[in-house]
Length: 360
Image (cartoon, rainbow, N blue to C red):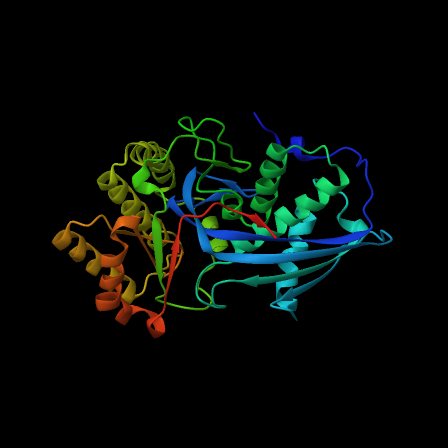
């Protein structure tokens, strides 16, 4: 069993003066939701997600050796421009991971990041952003210690990403990722995400995710606050048990190709996530009227056509429409005919299952 101390390095055999790396890392969408956590960024229940393909963050990390004065030194750019309001989050991340990356204070970093999806689209970039930064930092550590194995590289990148944003640990690899210790998933861990260890049925290969942008911009309640409200939540323990049970069920559906069971679990999980928000203290609602309109139209479309389309939600108002590749044309026509009217400015993003972080 992996322990956090496994990721504390000994002395580095090499020295590196300056250079740069550039990686992209995608967003991900959970099928079984993680909601509720313990310090440091450990999940109260396991989750499983599809890694996405085109919605991603691209981050270039430039580094230059400097005199270690006991402080972190970095500049943060977003799309080439200074982004001071992002810096506190990066500083907190560096403070959390310094024990695992003891070289951090010995370099000045320039972190230049951009997203492939529109800014303030309502798509969370914390997962993709922290994953992209983590694989860059692991590239520097591998330069300092070339003996680091590929397995250790990816595990530690996911481990580090988790300390920046919990779900970021699911954005390092693809296509289906499990985070959280679960008896039915060999090798699963609370410390990092692991690739789904079974063969996924062909019906789920290249699965599509069209993100219907109901609301753009900052959420009224952050996910961090939402997670904290699970402490003392009256339904928390039952919810955590349900997540374990649903992970077993969705594992079986992904292997067997049982789209009907997949749909029922995924939609139930989405609604349960929002039910937890509506029954916390204080309570809150992140769905909007157009979210519900879209859900009802998806249900009606599925009843009338028999096509295996379903929705899921993250901790926000946007709707992820999931469906197999072989029904793309019919579903896209349905979106244009019936769902675009409920999207902010008629906007939606077409994505699909992807393979995780990529090196440039």
